[in-house]
Amino acid sequence: MIFRTAATTAALAIVLAIVGAVTGPQWDPVPVTEHLEPATSDTTIGGQPPGGADPVGTFDVRETDVTIRLDGATVGGLLREPVGAGDDLPGVVFVHGAGTGLASEAFVDVATDLASAGVVTLVPDKRLDTYTTRHRDYEAMARDYARSVDLLRARPGVDPYRVGLYGESEGTWIVPVMAVEDPGIAFSVLVSAPVVPPRQQAAFAVDSYLRNTDVPHGVFRAIPRAVGMAIPGGGFEYADFDVEPFLERLTQPVLVVYGTDDPSMPVEQGARQVIDATGPASVVGGTDVTVRYYEGANHGIKVDDVLVPAFPRDVAAWVTSLPDSATAQPQVAGARPNQQYLAGPVPTPRWLGNGDVFVGLVLVAVGLLVLGPVVGLAGGLVRRLRRVAGRPGAPAGLAPGFRVPLAGLGVGAAATTVALVAYLVAVARLALDYEKDAWVVQGGWVGVRLVGLVTLVAAALLLNRAAEVRAARRAAAERADASVAVVAETRALRVARGVSTRVMLGCVVAGSAILLVILAYWGVYQLGI
Image (cartoon, rainbow, N blue to C red; front, side, top):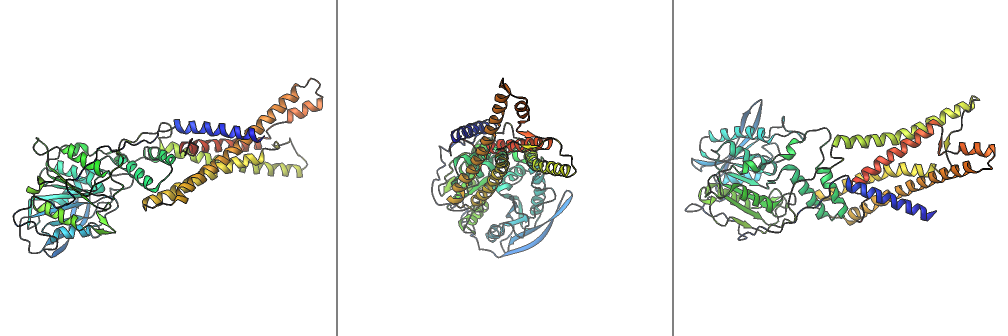
């Protein structure tokens, strides 16, 4: 009995492992083999004019609230000007990354530092009425930010031919669009730039965070199946926005900046792609690119929530020293980056790539697991009422030995699903906090798979018991000397008798089977760790 249960459980596990393997893509990112080597650890920008650029803190900063009129909306902005710096000053319009919106709260340190070094800065509020999680149009956003460029160019004391752009993170998908559509923009500063399309960047970031958290290898299968999925409810078309064609058309100087402790960005690949896409300024249509890496800095170029002092110093020197700083050597300087894997195309899931279908399957499975017991209880209540009324009706119920494994199958499938979701949420929290916890990461994965294995044991017991009932029924029916009573008893031998019992059995088995396939898809039953 034990051997038979073990063999059936193993067979089910193998089948589900195969199902999980063929229903979706694997995850196998390409390692970085050629690393970008900074020429020096000194990030100082060369090419400064005689006497050098004014350092950060040279001028007092005057702040002025401004209003920026867009098509169909109006946003505020915060203008910072260096007091006593003179006329014909360079200007910078800041373009927000994801998660930032108000001018009074975004870019406060760097915009103030640049202004104190002689650069007029304008941080507009992000337009939010056209910006949602599901919908973002980077080209339309570029047209909105262009109004801030117009405002800054018209500001007294600003040289309209020296106004450029500063984009951070998501904003670096917008800045190249603006620079291409307005060749009069003087320069672009790309800080923590993904460069690759958003979907590829998201997969890269998830991979990087999970590796740092030391998750088991099997968990990585979820990356292409989640990131490559069409999100339920539609939208997210911007996930495949490609900034490369705009980078290839840039003609203005570009400063690329990364922190070496930014796990969410392809810090080497991004810089290399900007250099390759833009081409040297000596080539027709090309431009000059300067790259700087800051030791231990995060996505916001901060260490312990403090802006790296050399960062605004270098940006200010580069901006105020243009055009000489655009070609100043070294091109790549700072701390040595260490990107382990390349960001690349995310495979599309073959069977469950449609998020609406996936959610629908989960809802159907849960609905069946709820409906089954409800129908069973209702049928039992009806039978009791009929017996009280003296009309017992036909026999009904499950055959002996079925109730416990059936309950184990339904409860186990639901429990494994809940455990998997809880595990992924816990791992996500650790990953986002860049923390490790072996009990949660390793132990949790083992726990999820053990609950899944117990569920398969219940399924094996159910299958074996059903086989026993069918075999007994056939054996009794084939007995040549069977009496009328034996034949009648054999005909009554069923796994489930009664309509409500059969519906209950079918619902629980079908709902559990759907959840088991989904669990296999997410790697719970894959072979190995």
